Length: 197
Image (cartoon, rainbow, N blue to C red; front, side, top):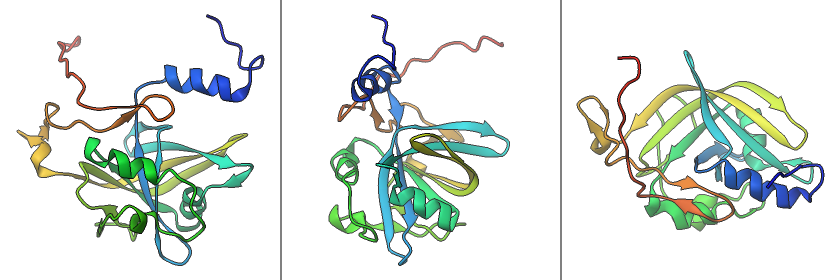
C-alpha cells in the first residue's frame, strides 16, 4: 500500500503516520502556568536527539493555530520536567490528554502529587520511573507544531531500576504509545551482541 499524504484526508494519513512510527516513548510534561499552577500533559512526538549536551526534542501540535498550554508555558518560563511512567499511570496519563481550560491544573483532576525538582522551579510527578529536568535550548515553529529542543540539566531515575550502576532493562519498562489510544507495556527485552566488539 502506497500512501500519498497529499491525496488522502490529513486525519487518515495521521493514523498511518503515527501507527507506523510505533511504539513511541511518552513525555508526560509538567510546566508552570502563568498563575504558578502546574500543567501536566502527555506527548509522544518525543525523543533524545543529542548527547553532549543532552538534548530532548518534543513536538507539540496546536489547536486550530493556537499554542497548547504546555507550549505557552515552555516559551514563557523556558523550563519543564519530562516524566517517564509505567503502565500503572496509563489511565491518569490518558485523562491528562483532555483539553482543560487555561490555568487549570490536571494534577488535581487525576489525584497526583508532585515532587520538588533539583534544578528547575517546575516539579516532577511523584513516583515516576524517571524524570528529566529541562531548560529550553531552541524553539522552532513548524506549520502545525511547535518543536522544542530541551537541554537536560538533571536526570532522576528511581533507585529500584538501577543495577550495577546502569538501568536494569528487565525492570525498567516505560509506557509507550502506538496510534490513537493504543499503548504498549511489559514488552519482551532482547539483548544482542555489540557489533563493534
